[in-house]
Length: 422
Image: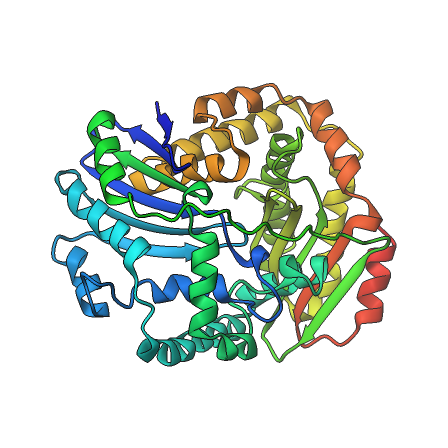
């Protein structure tokens, strides 16, 4: 299924061959993101990711970087999260050498040109503006701010307009030097690939990677003793909300149980919240429940867009489902449906080589252990109705409840009262 090799310099290489694949993806994943930043440098991980496309010694301009893969119909991009930053190229399987050359070039040889930094600040500020103009997106930032406050876990990944404007080229270079190092990096190639040949090529392309020790992130502080509410008043046609609870992190033994729990609540069109809030009550067009399990944080949250005149009713309806699932066992049929949904959806999502590369690389980087989909499915199959009930009772506590909302409502006191009655 996959093969992992750790090179002498600490660089981890994962090969994931796929039978009958016609493409392959080269992904470089670095263990650094917004949780590793300071107040002064908030947004620097994301900023640096942008700058890696601005030119290298071999490809001096943005256009030359972009045209390299555009000329062969390649798919390429980068992404920044709280705990990692990734760069990838997806190409026809015959173009492995080109993909390796391109990814290693931007990863190791980006010039971070001064002439591009000021312009890119403007681009990122417009990205921040775009997110804030979309309440269904912006409410997610309010949610993490509510949970974690003024610490890296509660800051926006893109930073603020002020922090981005003040980041210097030297700060970008220092951050890159300290974080983009061998032991903090995983390279995964998934698709039509032969492992022995691949390892030799990766050794050659990434021989110049730095071998310093990376900087650790600060410990996340979680303090909550009662329900919390954060409202952002804005003239909108519907209220956008995130309503959920603190839950288990990536290393908790019950993480798969809470994933199944979220699917039962709001992961499918036949899930409880979708049926109750959208189909029966007609209050929302979109509503879903999801789980986020990171190395040091975790939560289960329902996100929805609800008619402004029915916000209180919508919140109460969601809370009723939280209460119900923490008091009554789910049926075997409902549990089986959720399990089969996860297995089927995962199999579909992991067909593309880029998704498969991230699946394996992120496990290695964040957990230090890789489970195949089949091994994960085996763990999910063991989950019982009693397990679901136990986890629901543990996480659906008033002291863990949080509500973030964007809309015209000003009545924080009333919404707080609804949460306090849970």
